[in-house]
Image (cartoon, rainbow, N blue to C red; front, side, top):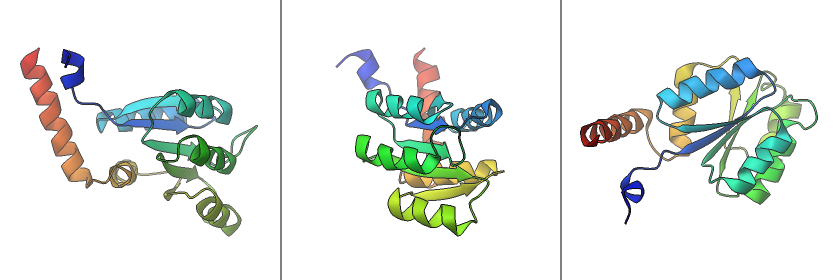
Length: 150
């Protein structure tokens, strides 16, 4: 086992949105939470990531030019069926958006814009099968061990 095999793997979250400011905000919050974050500003790039990377959680905006988030989710469940899919939308209360997203794309959760940092953390922790507090404590312990060894 090599030294890199011993280091803990951070869970990977792929964030997809056509707005750069939204992507940067998600990246900041999720990195602070202890995640590896990949960013894509369109559906095609997101699907390319899913082909190449082991992604645990996909957070995708609904309204994007070129490919709606629901289409990204439909394709994502075929490419990477183990990836938990979270739809991010300013239109989340619209049943024409929410119902097909959940039923057809097998969406794990629907988050509304603007979101609260705690909401993002809770959804990601839940998707990873952990409580947010447990997740943060585990990440803190991991980072402390890494600092001690360097």
